[in-house]
Image (cartoon, rainbow, N blue to C red; front, top):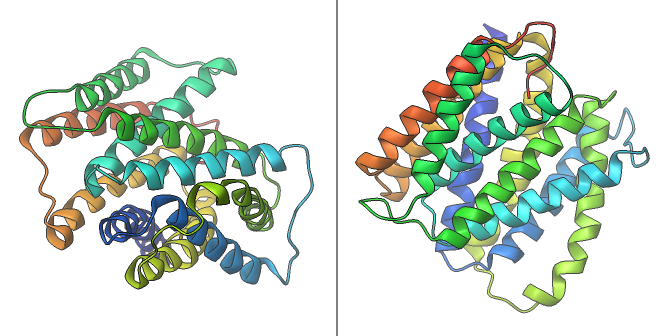
Length: 281
C-alpha cells in the first residue's frame, strides 16, 4: 500500500512539471529564467535531502549527467512557449522511452520481436504527433526542442542506472547544472519574470522535481522493469487530463489517437523487456 501511494505521488509530481512550466510561461515568465529558477530550487531541495548522507560532486559521469540535465531543462522550458502541457508531456515521454530503447540496443541488449514492434509503434505515433497539418498544429521548433529534451532526459536516466548513491548523485548533478546555467545568463538576464511564474518555477524545482525525483528513485528499485515501465505510462495521461481541466487545453482527436498509439507501443515494449535488468528508467 505504501509503495503504491509513493509511486502514484511520484508520478503526479513528474506530470506536474509540465503543468507548472506551461502555466508559468503562459503567465509571461521567460522560459530560460523559469529553467534557471527551477534548477536552483531543485538543487536546494536535493541538497537539503542529501545533506546527512553527503553530496556527490565528483566522478567520471558527473559533468556529463549535469550537462544532460541542463539540456533537458532548457529544451523543456522553451518548448512550452507553444506546446500544450499534455502534448509536451507525451512527446517528452515517447522520446525518453525510444531514446532509452536505442541506448539499450547500442549496448548490445537483446530485444524480441514484440518489443521491437512496440517501439516501432511508439515511434510511428511520435512521428504522427510531430507531422504538420490536420487538427493538431505544433510549432516545429518547439516540438524539436521537446524531442531534444527527451533525448537528454534519456541520457540522464541512463547515467542514473549506474549511480551508486542516487540521491547524493542527483543533488550533485543539480548543483553543477545550476552553476552551468550561469552561462545562459546573457540570454535571459533582465527578462520578464512574473510573481506567479517564479512561484511555479520554485514549486516545479523544489517539489515536483526535487521531491518527485527523490521519491521516484526510491520506489523504482522496488519494482520490476515491466511494472515500473507500465506505471510511468501514467505520466503523460495525468498531464493531458490535468492540462485539459486546469488550463483548458483539450487534446485534439489526432493527439489522442497518436498518443494512444505511442502508449500502446511502449506498453508492448516494457511488458516484453528482459527481466534481467533490475531497474526502471
